Image 1 (cartoon, one colour):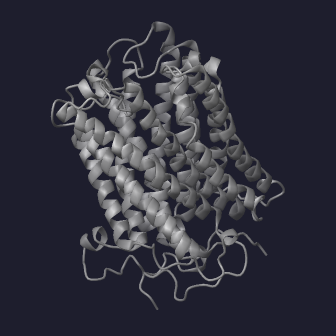
Image 2 (image 1 turned 120 degrees about the vertical axis):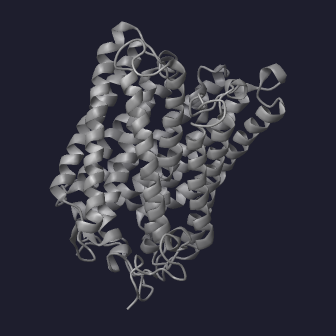
Image 3 (image 1 turned 180 degrees about the horizontal axis):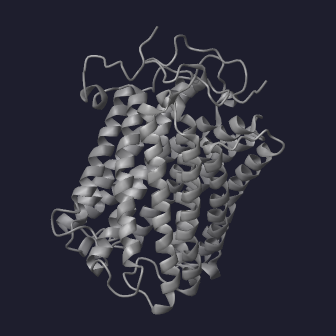
Length: 528
């Protein structure tokens, strides 16, 4: 009988047995623990921002400090939590298990990607305390300000560059593993839908992320050597930076959301006790989102000075990318129809995801309409839309997936009643925090401003109170999960009665995943 991967340490002992391990499960847990640490740092910065905005005028920080806080809040939450959350943490753990493999294709490269991730994250945080002060450009690092500011932008840029390198290596590993290491009998249309989403995400990571890395290196070079890539005073083009940045950063939205959609497609069949509706449509829509997602970056630049023809084209493409997302939502809801639905915590977070992501998607269509975009561009409406898509979408799906796979990862179960209470508090807090921002933005309150006019105070007070509720729910959820790792009730190999391969091995899995590589004879969601 093979040893459990928690007790197996190979030639190393102690902490070295983890940080030098090439076991995909340990690397997934390294990602999970480190990104939750960064998440707590980013959430703390978010709370400080909301406290500053509880009333007009200065409250707890100066304008310069506020600029630094929202810059690092964005960098941490996007590059250190949302992007790596599902693919790097849960994807690393579950991908080989779901396709019947021993490990990923390149185990050492997998470990190297985590080292790049943790190093890049620490360098980004170090920029807070070194040099000419924390970076104050916003997480988009727009030029020419990011070239001319005296703050420590270069260190933050280099940190994000390393994070991009980590993401690229992860994408390479996932694409190769899914192509080459599927169990006997696992054809493409017997793959779990989570694997389809990771496959589409891997291609986006491979093709889009290097563009960001090169762009950030050019900014660093321009800051140090004065080469005029982007600075208009030296013959550069600041709009070129915007194009290069969003050519990566809009596909990055799908690096965030596609794995979330894949996780939801795993949870719904397990808790509705029926096969997924429209398997091939969901699989193909993942590829369609990844493809069309490359073509819509210009909708971030409708007020930047593009030609009218370009804006019309990008607006049309923005509406088109909503079609495959709508296909997924329709199929999820259809899968629930007449199912024997269990409303355990994973399903509650999944239902929250569908509701909140739908709001984020529909308000995205509002943003994509040219005439409306001119009015709401750069307002709190965009902040609300972004958080409904990223937090209400990706983070809720991540929490759903974490609760779903928790017993498989640790062999223990969290307290279900506490998880449901945490879900309710998080859901209420999230909507209390972000929905007023739609109203504030429509009324004209700009985003990223340290101060605001008195007529916007009521909405900001409600939002700040919502942030307190949201954080209370998040802390309760984390307490329940962390406590249950060691004190939760032990469970069997398949507590949910799910049908994919990861549930056919022990909980937690053995070091090499399976005593024998399984042979697949049916699709992934066949319930007797």
